[in-house]
Image (cartoon, rainbow, N blue to C red; front, top):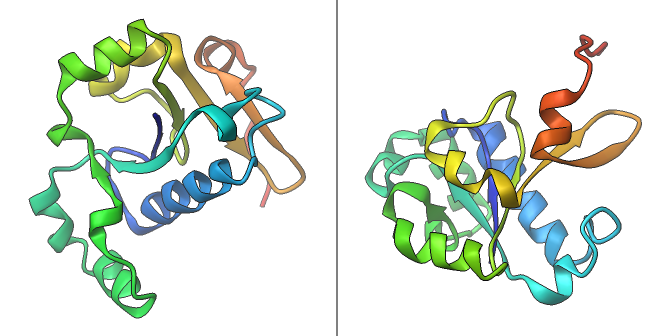
Length: 143
């Protein structure tokens, strides 16, 4: 399983980013950076909020209704069984890709060994391991 996780706030851009990148991963968008990803893993967008809080994200609810998408296509991290995720991690059957993040959320710390960060910039896309992300030199992005 590949969890594509937006930021902790689960704001609209983070939700859309997770959904689009998860779909892109199914079609090979990150296969060059993570070989075999689309072939070996099912990609699912994951939100860092409880499922019952999704209704409070009215902009996201509105967008999904307009696009005729069901929130059933989303995974909510607090609902996931940590023991099962740990077992998937131990058997190399779990990967996590962060998008729209600038730091690792506390509840994802246990997955740092299987974690990648999708750094999406205007001119290029690059996927980094979590250790590479932590070691990157910081520079502000020009928009």
